[in-house]
Length: 105
Image (cartoon, rainbow, N blue to C red):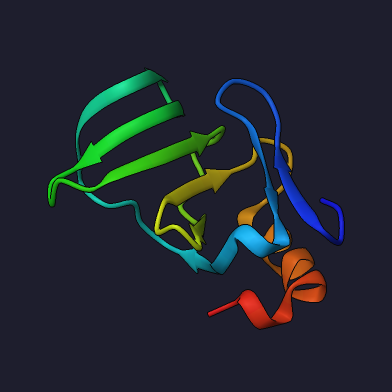
């Protein structure tokens, strides 16, 4: 994490510039996923684009069994749900809060 961007590495990774981030929230559940549109799901690892019960397309970058997720909402309305393998989501949320306090809900 840089002070001007957040980087998701690996498959379906991307770099979000600070100007692209509308908000970051810590959520305790995912929306109900009904289908995969482009990506893969293998056990607790889910990466790619998925469709929710409400018909919304979301990006999942989930690397663990975590029951807390970071929800990044981009300024264009796209949503990314993220969990890291090596660090709990609450710790990442607190790190982001220190860098981007105005984007947090």
